[in-house]
Image (cartoon, rainbow, N blue to C red; front, side, top):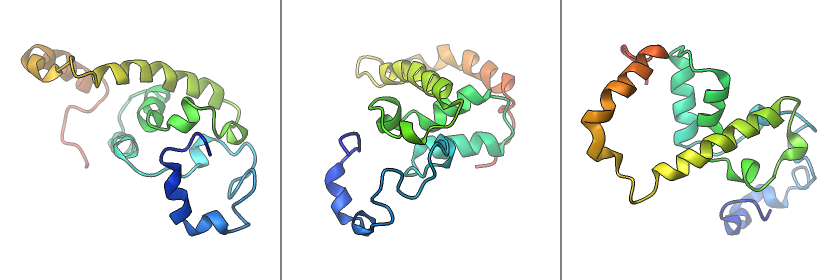
Amino acid sequence: EDAVVFPEFNDLNPNMSDPRYNTTYGMYEPNCGIDKLKFAWGHDEYMYRMLVANDCSVPQEGLDMIRYHSAYPWHDKGAYTHLMAPGDEERIEWVQLFNRFDLYTKDANNDLRKMNEELWPYYKNLLQKYGLDGELKW
């Protein structure tokens, strides 16, 4: 519970007093894998699903970085390791690598909006490379 963001809100969840979920594994099977866990939806999951729906060619490691970079209890606090499946150890390393750069871009001194014209050709090439340069499904 120490790894959960805003744990004070757990008291508002009726599942917290349901004995079926108050075990080491809760509603999950041991070593079920990170993909089986239910996280709150946010911009990460939305972007991941948008990329998958548009059949982009971003490698799985990149998709994992996008999907799980806000899952701090998992990749930063060591929670849910008992639910990880074989292969999840490598995936967490990719997410942790990405997160170092993700946090940097949120620095108040790093306003990339001022560099829009300068950066657009670079990002346009990336969109083409990964099959995201046409009309997209949102």
